[in-house]
Image (tube, rainbow, N blue to C red; front, side, top):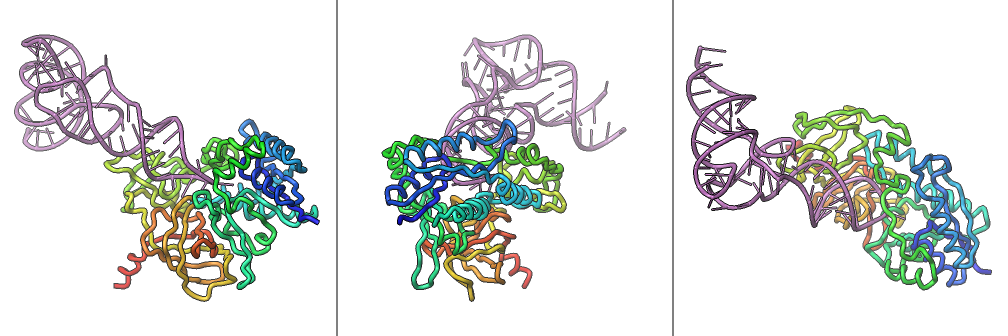
Length: 366
RNA sequence: UGGGAUGUAGCCAAGCGGUAAGGCACCAGACUUUGACUCUGGCAUUCGCAGGUUCGAUCCCUGCCAUCCCAG
């Protein structure tokens, strides 16, 4: 009897192609689309209804069943609420990371198992391999390194990885498009997704204020010496490394160096003030190993779409570790995820709690 | 109301007789399954105002206005 797979289908090319591959390989596939935004969110509700229609059309083209799950409550609770909370506390969240952890590989996986499925599959660009030696499921980078999405998947547990398939892991993006087109999947030429899915116009600040009724009080922009440079419109509107939207005119461009939710201050500085070579990472999830017994050399990403940087990571306790970069990194931002790699394998990752400069510590010692 | 200096786009600022550099900010695209960064493009028919000289003035002259500094 063929394995029963529930394939997440967003309505886009990737997930449709992933489902198509599974069908071709003989799996018993059921397509599933998640409704993330519940009804009645108003005129600006993202087009998840049309997405579901697109997914259904693809499923029909593949001759597989298709179901829609309304997971909006879980999405709101596990993704949107933490997203808002992070900004309010002066951090910068990764909603996609939380969504993968709790919704796609959480709620969806649970529903699939309840329906008697063996695994779920998604259109993520990543690979899962079982390592005989360690007895662990490893998360590895996709063959298409440009599209690799392991950064957003580092929270997955062994159990989640064991129950998941990434059919696109070995393909390049253009191969996926070609495959989708060959199968007559209408989504083959859909535009790439972009921005935060629940903030269709890209203005997350307005979303927080208007849709979630979050009030962020205006405050002051200060320089590193504490001098007032101007007024900001609320701390949630800024993130470390940000340049545009500050409205501050100077001889050189100014960037957000840090934010302080307690004093409601946004600190501005020059480009060179953005670099940090140490950071503390919490909420750690390890994939390639059960735990770390000592310092490890790895490459690290501090944001999606960034080339990795060489570093030494040292465990502090079960869920926390410190990272020392060989070379200072630009705009290491609290709230963002840090993901550690051993070549093309994800060692693990966590959320950045703080960043700084080791040289400062050295000066204090002298 | 004596002396000196300066007035160029939202801000800073070059140009000093030949038909308005640049930077910052801002706007629009591109990139992107996070926020950012980045990249590309746009952004003064006009140089405080009014006259004059000149083929031609932001650049020279005169007056006025405004601002700043020193002296009262």
